Length: 261
Image (cartoon, rainbow, N blue to C red; front, side, top):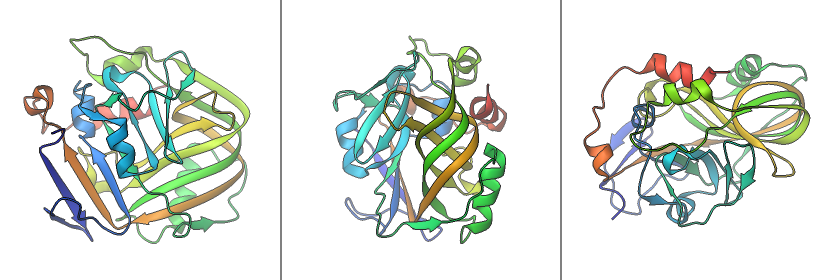
């Protein structure tokens, strides 16, 4: 078994459901962001099992070996040297979140102006979403006049905290680049389990570059989102996770990791 439990939030209520039960549009998450921040960088969920849960999402790989982009059911690995690979489906992850991005259910956001920076883009999307208390899968295709992304090289045990790792992270800068932002917007109450607000990874149109998004300026973009009506968390059964000192307030560490440039 690669998991010891599944907890699911449906319409804002936490409940345990039978195996296989799920919401109509659901985000499935493996492990917690707090565990990742604390250095739990190895899990036992395979990519093969992950893509059974969804065809769209983000995450990382064991040993923190790069940034993960799941797009159209294919898993892409942006490594610390900036190269992009399709890893074997036997590869494992310590943290990831996926959903099925159903084009029939996706809502369009039209008329997004060019020239928005990352903060302004998020603020504009916030104004157009039905509620900030729900979960959304968000896909942004188009051109970016500038975009800054990062990845990280594989780590060795004993793993350092993530905030220490990103102090020496490789940074990739793109100009007038076409590609796709893949990510989620989570409500504020997920603090400690997922990332409150927006979390995007980027993949260039030619599938040769990308990473965790740190900054951008929009060109012409097309935005689609799927409202997710449930959130399922799969808990690892590794010794590292079971014995990790979880429950700390790691807001400062998360901010440092998400915004480090």
